[in-house]
Amino acid sequence: SIGVQPRVCETGLWMDHFASTPVAADIDTTLFMNVCDLASPSSVNACYIVAPTEYLLHFPQDYRGAIRACENHLLSSNDNDNDKELVACTSGVGMEAMIEHIGDFESLQTVCLYA
Image (cartoon, rainbow, N blue to C red; front, side):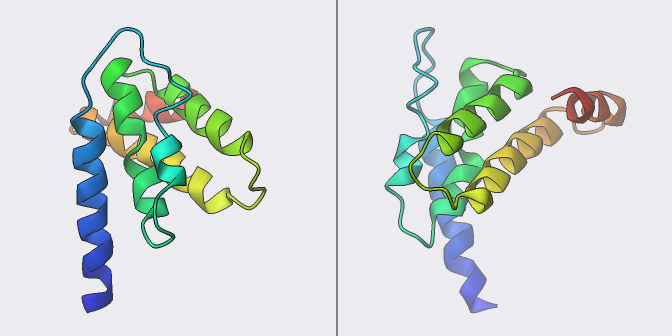
């Protein structure tokens, strides 16, 4: 459907944004998702789905920390209606875990159980 195409493009743009950030040891993990707060209403979920990519670039395989970063950012906001964004962000963590452990179901299962 033609309506899906803009969302797919937006997800790609957000992926490029988060994946191209320079890796630094002193990243402030409370700030990287702030850009999603500025996203247009139609692309905010796409932003949150790929936002964990930046966290995981700085802290490889720290899935629990990435989920905590999602929760801390979204639960501390003034918007009490951000369940969709929280689901998108934590789903993004799962997506990254799947990509990193493709072909290794046992490791992926362990990540999902303990993250």
